[in-house]
Image (cartoon, rainbow, N blue to C red; front, side, top):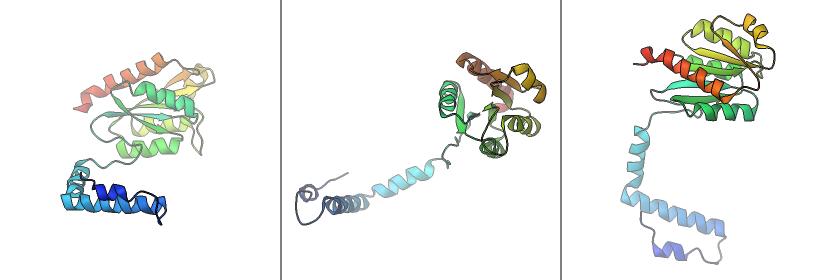
Length: 186
């Protein structure tokens, strides 16, 4: 990219404010880009990228959904799961997790959710929906209650994990989900 020396000289003190001088510099810079054809190349590059909504990974990787209202716990779980072969999507509600499942259900391998989530549905509702509509998805519900009591309320195959959970338990559950998803991922 070419930056003309004359454009740089215009930034000194003068009758225009620094903001208007900067805007003028950017305008000249943009015109230089247009002349050199860079925007077309950038547009072609952007068009070659897959469409992607923020927070939703695209591609062929299997997905892990972390549904947790507590920012720190959600960030910790997501950071752990990013060390696996899973793309991670973070949610604060069961509704958001269900939206991801509806869009990407075949690619979702793992749901890691808190029992208590904001909104009309909680983690148990999320687990029941996932187990019914996407039975291939491995679901782990975290709870402050004793896990045997919660496991009685959950669908078969959904695992309860007592808080505070250990990172190793999260990673092992994710690896089990990936291993189970392997045959259908080809």
